[in-house]
Image (spheres, rainbow, N blue to C red):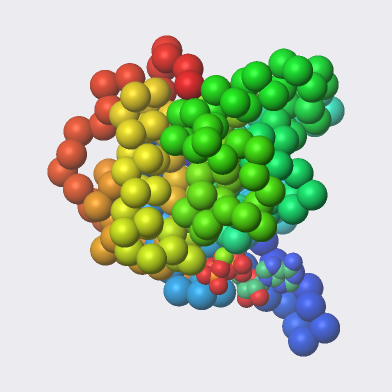
Length: 240
Ligand SMILES: Nc1ncnc2c1ncn2[C@@H]1O[C@H](COP(=O)(O)OP(=O)(O)OP(=O)(O)O)[C@@H](O)[C@H]1O
Ligand SMILES: [Mg+2]
């Protein structure tokens, strides 16, 4: 599904260059749940931002189903972005919009009319178990509920890949487990490929098929988390 080759990114800061990613290479199979582990400042978010096509690497390739996405632009890039759902570190919800309108936002940006966007958003909120909170403002939601809204917003465009940056780090253990159960359920039902950045390796590792470890922008060998089989759907047919 994804192959990353020789990915490098350096930030030029007043105090000198920061090599956030240094020749990173790995691949992800369709339907896999991949954990991306590493300490603070390791380059995890930078890697996710590159994969989500929100950051341009200095060099390297990102192949999505064999196609180098770094060479895609314009309308094709917008279409490609819809195939990759992102849950940002810290939710990134718009506080002036209800839960429903937050989830509808990616569709509105794509040009869906408001009614259609809200109908699809409502179905997706239902899927994450939050239909009873659809008219709530984010400031009136709990941390776990905000995370469910963020997950629904990432899923509303029916992506093939779901990328989550520290989805459980701000939550208590029970809420974190319920969010992980939700992610695992969606993966099993739809075959969506999932990449999860975390430093909670024990907790999150329970739903990962495999993990990679990054430190100072350098990736070490992938390791196995679980012996579990990949979901039967394996990212092929069923949509969310
Ligand atoms: N826009 C930027 N400008 C300059 N430096 C940056 C920028 N973004 C990230 N960095 C630097 O790149 C390095 C990697 O940052 P990144 O956010 O990817 O780390 P991380 O592994 O996600 O850390 P955390 O676990 O704390 O979220 C850090 O040293 C950071 O300071
Ligand atoms: Mg980060």
